[in-house]
Image 1 (cartoon, one colour):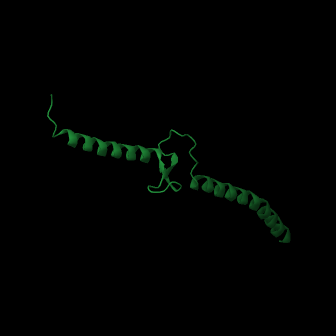
Image 2 (image 1 turned 135 degrees about the horizontal axis):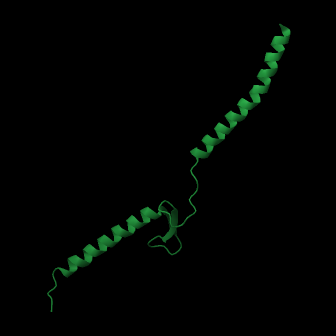
Image 3 (image 1 turned 180 degrees about the horizontal axis):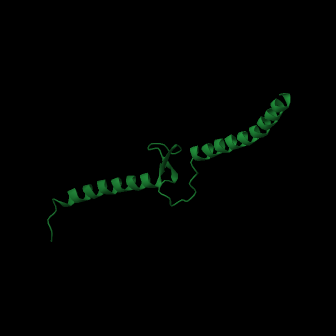
Length: 97
């Protein structure tokens, strides 16, 4: 009986490190998937770009604005649309030659 018990104990001790290694690999896999990879391609739509913009009324102060490339493109489009509306509204009252 003691021989059987010692054999089972030895088998459990051998199996435990393998199970621990498998659990550690599973834990490493979840850590890798939980943390997204940092985007290094500057042309990628989700790459974050930061710009320093001067504060109006100050010569030395700047604000830092960080957005993704996609968001910067949307900001530029909104600015262009607003400018286009101003120019077109100014031309509406003009008489052609």
